[in-house]
Length: 148
Ligand code: HEC
Image 1: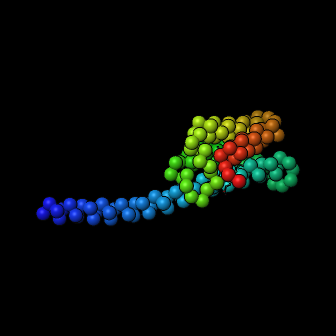
Image 2 (image 1 turned 30 degrees about the horizontal axis):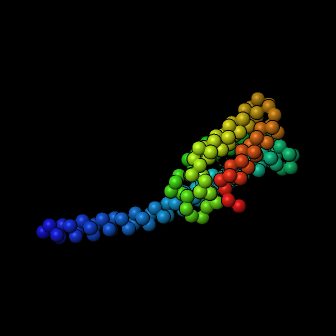
């Protein structure tokens, strides 16, 4: 009786454990995909802002939506690098997690640059300087925490 119960427990545990490990493998992929999508959104707003500011394309009336969209997406960056997303089809380097403090500072730099851009836009400030700071924050993090 006891043995039967034991075997049943083992079988149950195995039945539950298998699908769970399959699910966590898929989850890393989903986490990485989500991260890339957020970065693409950030890249889309940034590229659009540079195009408008440089009078290359777009329209000044689009500026506000890009500035606000960028600020919103930048606030997500602190959440899109969970440790479970370290391995897979990603260019994020191991340093993201081994140098958590430096990485957090790079995230803060982006948040501040995006907020600074919103501020410059709202108060007729120097958009050129604000965009330069923004571009610097991207490069700073990519140089240190993204592989080529
Ligand atoms: C705090 C670090 C950090 C900051 C700041 C940052 N990025 Fe990234 N970015 C990354 C990492 C790491 C990846 C690689 C993600 C991956 O492959 O999983 C990436 C990937 C990207 C990608 C490629 C997405 C894809 O399709 O694979 C684009 C585009 C991008 N970033 C644009 C930007 C722009 C534009 C800025 C600045 C406005 C910026 N990033 C700021 C860390 C950062």
